[in-house]
Amino acid sequence: MADWEIITPKVNESAEFLEIASDFGNPMELFREALHNAYDWEATEFWIKISVEPICGQDKLVIELSDNGLGMSKDTIIHHFWNLGNSKSRSNQKAIGEKGHGTKIYLRSDRVLIRTSDGSGSYESECEGAFSCLNDGKVHSPRVRESGEQYPNGTFIRIEGYNNNQRANLKQSIVKDYLYWHTVLGSVENQFPGRSLRDFTVYLQALDQEEPEKLLSGHPFAKENRDINRLFEIHGEEAVDHYVKKYIYPSQTLETMPEIKFDVVIYFEGDAAKRAYNPMIRMRKSQSSGAYKVSDRYGLWLCKDFVPIQRINEWITSFGTGSNSFGLLHGFINCQKLKLTANRGTIANTNAQVISELQSAVQRIVEDIHLDLYKNDVDTLRKWKDEARTAAFEAAAFNKRKELITQKRYFRIGERTFLVPRNEAELYGIFISLYTLHPDHFDFEPLDYDTSAGIDLLARNKSQNKIADCEFWYVELKYQFGATEFNHSFRNIRRIVCWELSPKVKDGSILRTSVEEKTRILHIKPNPAGGMSTYYLDSDDAPIKIQVVCLKEYVTKKLGLSILDPRS
Image (cartoon, rainbow, N blue to C red; front, top):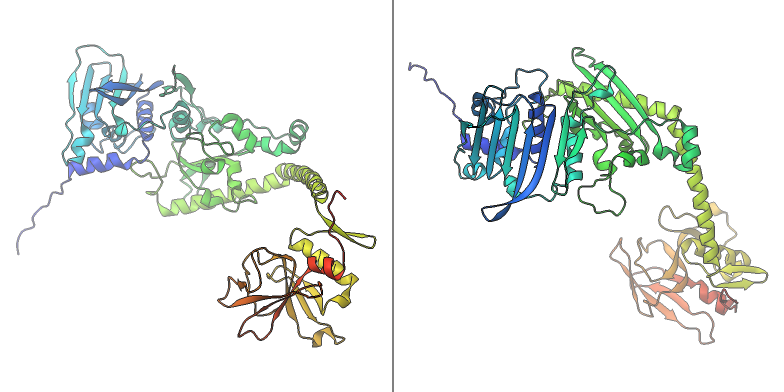
């Protein structure tokens, strides 16, 4: 038997570098990776400056990132910054970075320049055309040297031509929003008792900003405001939109894995309360760049290192009464046992049992919150708001109906006034009134009115027999006959009652239905004496003709009444 031969697996270096660099789907992730590196290397200040500069005859996007952290040694630059998978933070349990992939997002550029000092020496490193090389199947070639000048402790990185110079979203408001929702700048750790945020400040100057803006650590929330009586005094029926209540559940444990802990903070925030601190929430009909709807951003987020990673609103579909009720929640669940994908985009690498138990625990917490809101405050505020809206709606509807009445034509029978109908519901009222006054003018008896099945009236031929012993058939109500296609079968219809015929139809018009292929032809027989015309639908294979009753003709020709103008 032959001896075993040892196989040494190899990696296609250029392909792996290209895949990791391309795996970061959102170009904004550059700021997250750079900021987290600075944070892990004990920086207290981090600067972001975004500009456009003419380079080699072309306007190029330039991003400059600097911090006052520990800086990098020559060895760190070579083996950790430029290499793949070698994170110097891997052994640091408090560090955010752990995979050694983050700095590879810098490779999506034309040039990267580094200037850094760790206190013992100053170094510079650069890499030209990294992304072009990788796309050509070649490994990029960064270089490093000791600098002839002494830099202050920290790191400066200049990136030219990043992401093919695409920069539409590199505005102050959009980048700032990203930093507070997707980086450690927006940490929620200080929301828990006994926890505080480390001294860390970001200075941001995006393309549309004249001077750097100072950004302090801590995710923004609305200020608690849950005195419902005071809220109602100030805001009236809109009080619920300003209501804010905070719920915290620190140091929770999983049921079968009690060694795994998680922390939960959830704010219930009314719509107005959110908009007061978040200018990125889109107003109705607004098309402002980077703005979003509440339902596109709010709800519950899973976190690691108290940094939001993945939204999990599908876990809480039972919350509230509307499809977007989760938007009233502004909450975060932090668990250090979550395993992230290489680009920190999802928790897909986490043990399935951990996710399942975490989901169940979160659902129980949200149920408790829902019950608390229902029992105490918000249900009362919603009731007050609904009552106020109902009153306002009724007042508006009343005024609208008064306005419409004064514009509608009418006819009179004795001392009674009848308004000309404008829809099938009003047509039904007119028909029943006319039938009650003159039942002998109609050769059928309407018995049951129900629009839920699509056909309006159940009727029978005039008879003294018991109802149970009769044959029944349908009467369809059409405000304007022939204006629209029939949406049900002709099969069981014997009568069609309308107010008038549509100008679209005439003698010989073919009527169709959307539910069957059969058609009917409209026949019109004028009355030589000037009375009501006869209308019916027929076909060669139809066993029964469908009679059409035109109530407008009935009123004017049968009863001899005039349709009057509302001003008369």
